[in-house]
Image (cartoon, rainbow, N blue to C red):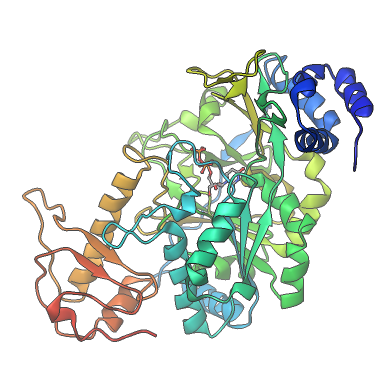
Length: 488
Ligand code: UTP
């Protein structure tokens, strides 16, 4: 909707934000148009509410009379009695084209500090293949095994859209059909300073951030993605985050349990080792499924309780891996005005009174975000909450080193893949403490599991003495592996 200067001034003044036009006299025509269109798109009612409740007053935590541990399905595997049925239900869902994939890749990736979208980060320790490429190789493998199409819906934001699309084009969509890779954009929301005033990133642009991964709910509906899924016969969306390198895309057990229990939304959880481990916790609060953020643990002291052996009673950590039924997304969308917002105190670059760019050293304002796990509270049937073990399922890349980093993910994955090689008859060198001492990388297109790896590694076997990278087609420079069966 076009807005003229007078109307923009009136609206801004009504909400105490007239400083947004501070540089008006200096702006060219194109810049004025840009700024007016940003003002026109603002949801002032929402912003007033967020500023009032989250900035000008200290937010009041929700109170619950009961906070209970979430019922968890134990780790799935062939030794579980109900697992075969779940596995088959998962296979059927894939074969019959009822599954689509939702990748959220709209975040700003500030902690990693990588130039470009996080998904383009060259995570392969030997090949330098990107996070996007690893995920694409998983899709290749599943599509081949199940002779199906897995439409890949990728959420981007103003911060990542152009570069992500360019990256996929430059890489020829990693050999997948561009018709089945559908980008859609989430909304942005203004950041504010500590007094609740909008910040300007440029004299003609507000400082804004993507509206959080929960923004996928409105974005899926408003961009016609749920409609596209419906037209394709897709009923189930396997949700994952771009920075989880190891994530099992469209995991068969997980989908199977979700289908068998007619769940609307399901989540994987991993076992927390200490009560204060910095991950969100799945729990049931007054009968509703919730995830409580680790920053709020002290508000709900029950969440810090341990058993007689010192293990957390509320152990269900949140690795951000979910399944959402398409109908459920459409229903939650209808209630999105009741979806909670969260605030984060951040360092937000801004223009000072003179128009100079300031990069603050300390947090100077707030970003507002929604989180996808908050959809759990809208479920009408109990979600399936399935336990996983972290290696091979959850290696988030948040930063270069330390916890949840590139460095830690490489170490975890090399141990994980070493186990596959050794199961296939190829011992790997280890140091005195038993840790693997070479780099290892196995393409998910070659194998998604240890069993598949052992089956596919049909060449001659023997001990390994140098770094091993097995590519998508099974190519490996090591001579004893020349006989690897090509999977394509
Ligand atoms: P994070 O919360 O870790 O944020 O996102 P981030 O942007 O990757 O990194 P930091 O916090 O700035 O360092 C987890 C996942 O959710 C996606 C991210 O792209 C990542 O896959 N996400 C996050 C979105 O798609 N949109 C958002 O608005 C926020």
